[in-house]
Length: 335
Image (tube, rainbow, N blue to C red; front, side):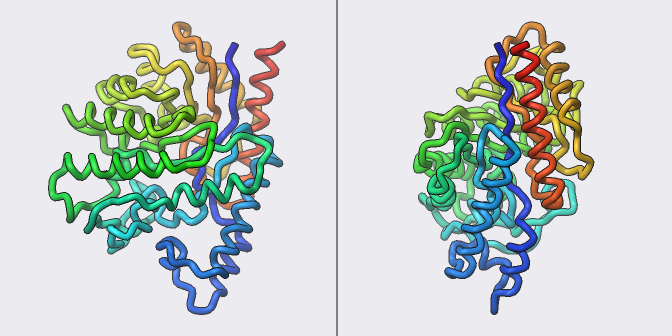
């Protein structure tokens, strides 16, 4: 019997009141928020905002609670942008949209940092009623978003990124689930040989935790070889963007198989139109019906992308729709 789990890929929009308070701090600069040198006034705002987004998720009825990644002004590049061995330089377009991040240029050794674990520790201290979920950039995407001026060898650089992320994940408190976000596998797919190495890197990061690991891909469908190699990684679930490209994702699943659990991007993380819970439940049922050879133990029902693109009100409504959609799907299974 399939269990439907409502969750998100995280990276939420910062609450409006938090933006206002941060903007009013004397001498405040945007880069101060993300380079690890925040003052007490700034960290207090983030602590309050973290509790706020945890409450959003609890009130909506989600089955996992993410930290919200509210400090991630540089989106998935954040873990490098706050690292001592990295310089942040010019503004770079974040994939093919109107969002931008500071280019992280690796100029020194990528030693352990602990920034991600610190945020998760703060979330754990809130003692939420639902299991915790960590959100981490996947090793292929993080390397794709960065520039190397230290290792000077592509394979060595990607290996260093992988080791860095594995060390960060190893320091996490107890979490139920880890979402590795890997949009670059779709947007800038690895070539022959590199696709196998990307899978190996994901496998190594996944080995750093006992939690269930979900590799969430989005903005389209994986190329066939990339998908096949990804299935070689020892992960619990692969995520598919059924908002952007349901046909090719369905083909990959039926042609090459997939993991025993699966994550489905069923609500649009970039569009302010809020899906009805019935629509979300129907989309999950449709995927289940269209994959007759699969017998999924868990279906994670999520937005297809991070949520920072949305206004706060729409973000909250998406959370409510996901939770209600998963509840409806579970009721239909139990009926």
